[in-house]
Length: 325
Image 1: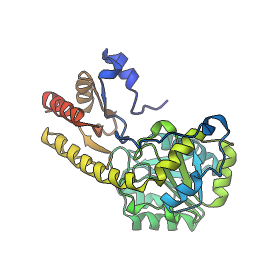
Image 2: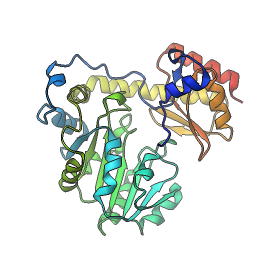
Image 3: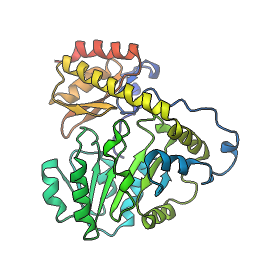
């Protein structure tokens, strides 16, 4: 299994610190999650149905009715490679490790951003996370569309995972998905803070959605998760307030890290990335103080999620003052 953020119980055992005493900044999930309203008892008692309002709420929110709800975008990440014949896949390095891992039956090239353009000429699939996880890189919309056009012209495809784009969605390609060779993934786990619901969406042409639905089977998303997600997608007032707050908090987090000498990185509305040669040591010293970050080895760096309240901000500031150089 690949390593992920959020392995808080393992960290608690490793460092001998009680679970309740941790500040978990390892996941990039909104710490002030959407407040799910009470759900009708029927969603627990009946099999999920596709006329319960989820699809229409998602089409409204994302701007495209060509969608398939899935059990988190992870389900699509794992199922998509089998929908295409073996071929040449290009992805960014570094990126979310589950993507290249899922395509290991294909010929995968993980490349730095500067080499992507040349590699597209020989690729069947270009697979990108936008903005990228863990370093927050973003590609201009016009560049993505140029790559898509080049790939689609010879039967290839661009797959874009937009799990972290909801804080600043202007460059989303979802409204264009449905064109041949363009697949876009979205998730409610990060921006809405509903990672435990395991709900995501695939936007693509109808034939691919049908193939995916057949592969994933019926009732891919539970009734309670469908109800909670439909409510979150329809709540525009909460969304607007969350975008404003997350932008401010991400800026604040960047300033805190910079002040303590952790400079030179980038981020998104939901996390900040800092490359550090001593990342492993800094990760360990923060963990010894009950603060969990996400450690990356290649390249060496730490990803910091957002603190949730005033006490969390103060705790992070004090810990960085004690351990950062």
